[in-house]
Image (cartoon, rainbow, N blue to C red; front, top):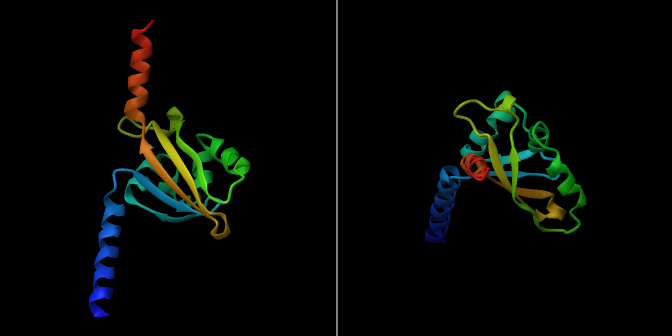
Length: 140
């Protein structure tokens, strides 16, 4: 039994290191947006929207840039599943700084409606956005 619990503790530690070092933002919230768990990359990506000032509600953070997620949550009728996949949000210029994130992609999953749990994956889409804008200029 001690070997089994030792393996479980080791596996949990490995999983926590993986989540902590993941190159994407990971956020767990309830349906109302209250942040329950967040990894360092998500903190970095969400800082320009007010996380650094202590706002701990994911939906309120996003409201400054887009209310799309609230709408998508409102119309989602299933008990679990993908609410949106790589939904791009561009941050207003007032929220960014020269080395900051200007756009990110959101993938949002309803894990279990009964437990009121959402998982959000946030990717930095700034470089892809800049490339798209350059390509559009070249095609003119």
